[in-house]
Length: 464
Image 1 (cartoon, rainbow, N blue to C red):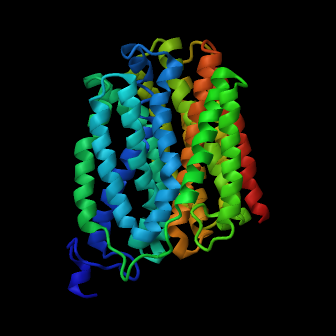
Image 2: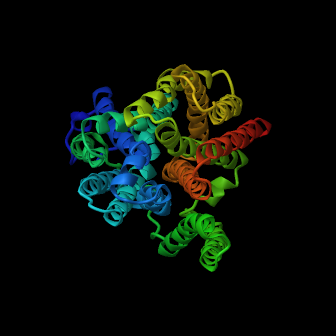
Image 3: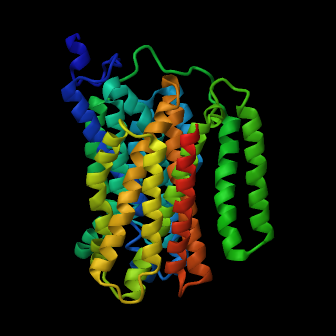
């Protein structure tokens, strides 16, 4: 390979034929790991701090959940359009732009003085996170050799899982040394570091991009109407019941979805990859992922309120008790990737999700005065189940799509994760509002049910 292809010169217009050279690969993976870690971490890092933020900002617990919802909702609305744009102008550009937006928004989150400013900054931060997530898998296919693609997807899935479940622990550590704005301020130096390394290490595509068709602005608007109005409508339905506003939002979502489906099904490179969704293995993997991530957010929003409000624990104790979920993933995620060479993803995912369901049910019924050991083994069971599901599931989604649809496949992985997390956050918010004194066990019980449904979807893949 010529020297110009291995140098870290940002101006080199090269996409290696089979991944990056070893030294440059390590730099690219490290930089992307930091970015993915931050974007996923900020989905859940606020959860431990919600009771504290609720008190300091003088808002109700249900209102405080919108600090999470604003991030999720903004991200899910723009994720697929950004993935489609990445196919047209280059994954590297979308990724670096998203990293810049995310880092700047983190600074403004840290300097917010009221709920309105914080929600607005979190929404912008969500757009930056969506930019990173929308092209993450496409970049993995570019930088890893083909023989290492499964390992690359597994490493990425492990980072996502680890980020999500270590959020409460990291938040607790930060809160033990400083106020809640530090939760966001920590992203600024990390974001700058990741940008510099990514700018130097990530390749530019050779000969242009994979899709030169004009960007479909109408489909992007319909996509926003579908996802935005659906989740806002569900939230409004929980707060106001069957109100005119809730019904109108849901009707807009349904109409937008129908028009979007009919429009996209005729297109060669649709913004919403409906052609991929018609593949049973792809659709079942998406449904499995959505249900599993609903469980994740139901757990990580409800558990801090249970531990702090009902058990009287500190944020540090809360983070420590949630840590076993993250620790077990460090060991099980690589094992799940290895087991994929011997067993089908549907079987591994189904077994893992049954364990997740049992763990959530055990958490929901652990009583008023559980010991640390009582909590720890339940958290470890949940972490084991979640780790067994995610790597095989994401690898299946990537493998079920053509190489030239890498952006679409990556966008759909992000959509599944963020749809589940957003719906989980909305359901947690509704539960906190309707039954504030019993919200924790109810939310955890719902999580057990969704994990069982996810297991059914996963096992169904064995029939295809």
